[in-house]
Every structure is written in C-alpha cells, then in structure tokens.
View 1 (cartoon, rainbow, N blue to C red):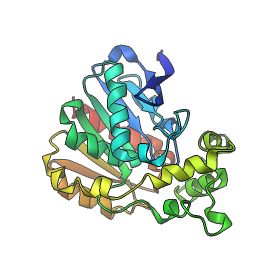
View 2: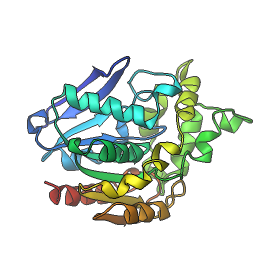
View 3: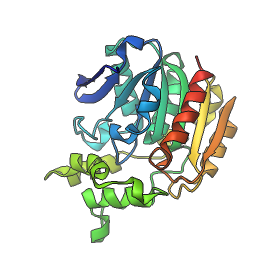
View 4: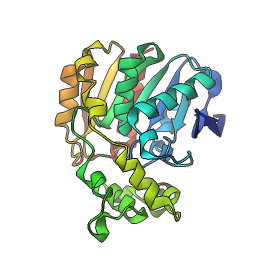
Length: 275
C-alpha cells in the first residue's frame, strides 16, 4: 500500500505544497511539475501507474494549487526551478527524474542545464521551449479587453476544454480541482500575476546550452496539441543529444488527461532505461 503525505514546505519567503508518495524508495524519485493554469492534480491519472515502483513527488508551483501566492517577479520559471531545488534539499533527495508539462517542461530544461547533478532523467510533455510561449490565450488575461479574457475560473475551464482531445475526460469534479484554487476574491489577480511572470526568454536563453544535457531525455507530445504544436517537440529533440521524441495519439495539449495509460507506459519505459 502506498504511503502518501501532503505538506507545505518552506522554500524561502513562500511555502510550496507537495504530495510525496513511497518516501522509503527515495533512491528513485519521480518529480511531477505542472504548468499554467493547473496544479498537482494534473497527474492524478498517471501516478497510479508508477507509484508501486517509484517514489512520487508532485508539486504545486508557487502561485498555484495550495501553494502560496506571490507577485509575478517571484513566479518566473527560473524562480520556480529554485523552489523545487529547495524542496529536494529539504526532503534529502540528491537527484531525481523530472517530468514537466507546459511550464513544467521549461522548468525541467532549466534544471537539466543549470543543475545536471540533481537530474537523473528528464521528460518534457507538451512543454514550453524556445520562443513558443507564452500562449496568446495566457497573455490575453494580463490586460483583458473583453469578458472572455477576464482571468477567472471560467477562463480556466475554457482553457482546459480547448486543450483536450476527449472533452468527456473533463468531469465536473476534475475541473473543480483546477478552478477552486482561483475561486476566491483575489483569485483573478493571482492568475493574472501568474501570466505576467511568463517570458519566452526564460527558455530561449537556454537554447545554446541544450546540447549539454547528457541525462536520458524523452519528449512526449499530443498528436493534436493546438497550443504547442508537435513541431516544437521535434525541434527540441534536434537540440537535446540522445533524446527520444514520441507522439501521443488522439491527444491534445493535456495528453496525460486524454491518454493517461499511454503517457504512463511511455514514462515507465523511459524510467526503465534511466536507472
């Protein structure tokens, strides 16, 4: 039976909410990192496939989920990478397998380039890279010019629905896991601050150094990703030595929602080659 604990860890001026499973297996830790506008629940359908064999650490990035809120200057991808390093330090995890989606994919690249000693392997799933972000949809909530662009739980729901291949996977209960953290009087401004933190230079400046990544790397992309089209995964594949690139069939941007079993099997295959 899996042992699970959820706690908030001090990462400096803020506390990051994390869920840690199978702590006793700390030699093989898989860290799951979400993007905007989700949280650690993004991985709920994937984790059960892995948690019998690996320790699992899923995080709510600062500004998301149950983690502390912060101004946009503290929510950049390099800052988020630093917070994750602090979590690993406090949990006495020397190195880990990193899995990142969307913004999490950019954070994974930052850690692999700047802190290779802490990274055993990387998996980027429909991730930000080069100058392919932030998405126009995400930029639109910075200074909304009409009702549809106002940062709100409804905006989050629309973004999720437009980012899946199988809308039926988005049950009301599942959507609520992502809308609830921003369903507060300050939620709209918190979501706006998250958007203001995003700048493509945070990954574009890494491009000359991607060739230095030596750890096993797998790039998974939804075949029908309308937000970050598969071209970007192929381009990342060309820049990261010894990486592999695979399309997830009948999946869009949130491929772990559309095809959790396929994504999980690809992760297990990747991890089996990375130990």
